[in-house]
Length: 287
Ligand SMILES: C[S@@+](CC[C@H](N)C(=O)[O-])C[C@H]1O[C@@H](n2cnc3c(N)ncnc32)[C@H](O)[C@@H]1O
Image (cartoon, rainbow, N blue to C red; front, side):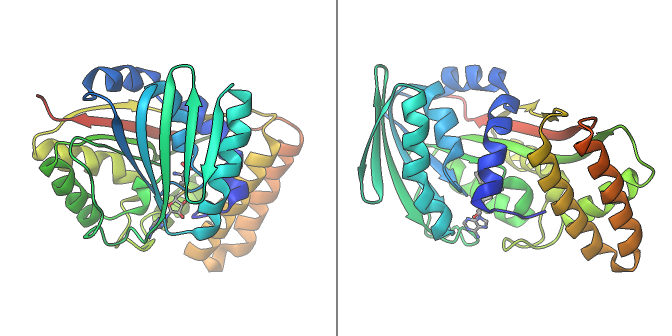
């Protein structure tokens, strides 16, 4: 379940957008310091966090979009231009930088290729907003502790969204849903390049780590509610889940493939709905 292909990220972007907690965004606009806002987006992928958040934040913004995947980073300007047209915004590209401009927004974005497994030389400007979406379940508790110390030092605000929490509701149910869910959650804990991953415990651990060092924390559900007409996304999820489950229990391959077949039948019949647990976390230091 670690597909970072641009197809997958493109497919999930609208679902992410409609799942994120609006309530936390309202609080964010109250607790953020003065403009310009400097945003660091960790594990930016194709830049979907920027496309969601810059419109919500409005005003003057400077974004640093960081990821280690060159191919994903290359897609950001084109994807952002396409999105800008729909949102009546202008995008001006200058190599690895671009400017998004509109009536109430001026956003300078800088694309940066970097491996984030080691945070030592990641520079975070004073009072920045440190953000990531769909990244936290990949990282380890030590990694989050290191990030927390860095954030505390410069009184950063944090917004970590779409953290998978281990819950998957299948409708209609199949006998082996529970088995597959437990294999997926076990797979989530494997090392994804940042030490042993927090997986479904990510939200809980991050809240604990940041609270302990003095952060005010709010967290809200941002569950994915996947409708029966979302065939492509559901099919891709089933493929990823099957791979993860077989990796965890190769001796049950046939049983797991049979589960996939039954679930895919519900998808094709437009009868399958899924709810996948996620949470968003906002944190800040009181003035
Ligand atoms: C699930 S994707 C989320 C992408 C994006 N934030 C979004 O919401 O669409 C996780 C991202 O983390 C990036 N990533 C994984 N390991 C990384 C590492 N060691 N350094 C930097 N980025 C990494 C991947 O390339 C991918 O873009």
